[in-house]
Amino acid sequence: MHVSWLRVKAVARRHYYVLLRAPHRLFDVTIWPLVDVLLFGSIAAFVNPGHATAGRLAAGYLLSGILLWHVVYQSQIALATGFLEEAWTRNLLNLMVTPLREAEYVAGVVLFGMVKLFMGLAVVSLTALGFFAFNVTNLGVGLIPVAAVLLVAGWLIALFVIALVLRFGTGAEALAWGILFVVMPLSGVFYPIAALPWILRPIAEALPTTHAFIAGRALFDGRGLLWGELGIALLGCVVMGVVVLWFLTRMLWTFRARGYISRYT
Amino acid sequence: MDDVVRISGLAKRFGDVTAVDGIDLVVRAGERVALLGPNGAGKTTTLLMLLGVVGPDEGWIEVAGHRLPKGRSAAMAEVGFAAGYLPLPERLKVDEYLRFYGQLYGLPDPDVEAALDRFGVAHLARARGTDLSSGQRTLVGIVKAILHQPRLLVLDEPTASLDPDVALRVRSGLQALCRDEGTTLLVTSHNMVEVERMCDRVVFIASGRIVADGTPTAVAESFGGADLESVFLRLAAADAPERPHERSQETERPAG
Image (cartoon, rainbow over all chains, first blue to last red; front, side, top):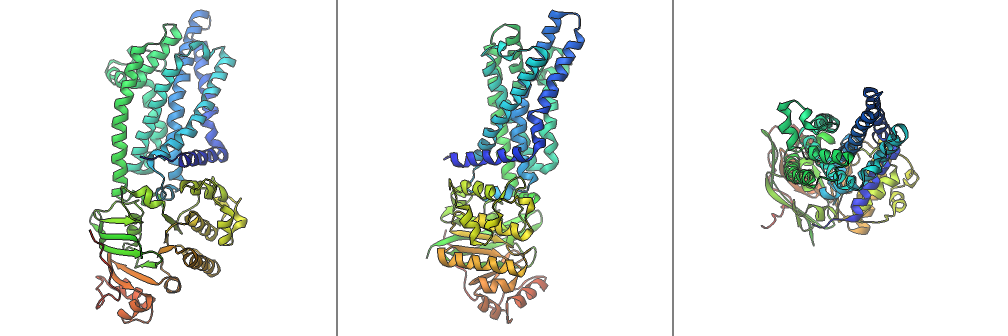
């Protein structure tokens, strides 16, 4: 399949204009990361006020957790809300009657989503450093593959949400944010999944994000990169990717077969 | 003459409702065709299938030699589409919007100003979509549709919300486009006078079927009416539309 770089860039630029003209969208990449770091950093300071080592440890778990969580959050939100922007502005029909391919559209939104991701992560890193003396770079280069797996997981969650919106309409758009509230506790972002109620642990084990966060915590503990956990996370992403892409293709077919475009015209 | 559109045995049902019921249609290069019919006749569903947005239950469609849905991207590169009911994305200015769509059609740096000027709206280049009147939005939508000089221009109710002055400008612009560049036009409209002035062929659809196909004069005569409006009123009034004695210009059934 031929992919047009010009079309990918055009979609990315279109979403740059959206961010430029819709200041409330900046909340996702500035205010929420700031609030999250303040919230979790302050919790760590509160629960261990007199114990410097334990306090530092707790703050480290919470802050490294929220940093890595924002990789999932930013990549997911950028792609899901990018698509929803087309639904909200009734632009879907305009796009669907052009030569633009689905993969080109996703690539364009993802491309600009990377810019938003770096903005969000910069806010998290600088806030953590400024307010809680937590230096992200101390986690080392092992952070990069962990973040890469979480990035892919975020995109896959977004594609799942897009598939649901194609099938059920904008009524499913609450999932763009809501689904993360389910994934976050199950992934053990701030704690080992042994801390979860036993009935939820198998579900947590099955999520690729869980294993990426285990690898992330090991980096903070100075245990180095746990390649085994990262491999499981990667394998989980591959399986999730196959399932999500099948589901998305199926929902796109249903969208065309049932004429759901009429919901957006 | 090339066939720009070839449709055979096209059918679409939504639950118990049959929207399109076995349409065969060929549109040749340079033709200016109006797809007419009462509300719910199946015009827009037919157009949306032609544009690859809705999948047919039966039949097949070829646009500019590309079979849908497999050749959708290549086919749409040859098509421009505008509809009176489509808004402009509110966060884009007009020139940004046109440049964006131009690039989707493979034009790295489309001549936005010249395209806007063609319809006398070059002064709108830096306006935001939300600041435009519905007539201006329609004009900009049509400019978007012709930016890449498509072989086939598909317009769904293009002048529905326009005052007579702007509608005249649209009509003149489209006629000049078809004349100068040989663009094929496929348009739906409820404005019969406009259709008679702009199109050289009309295709009447009722209950999802083609019931008349020919020049405006020939179709009106085949229904025993003086003009297209009388044909329209007769079809709209009929519960079960009957076919006229015979088609004034037989639709060519595509091979295959």
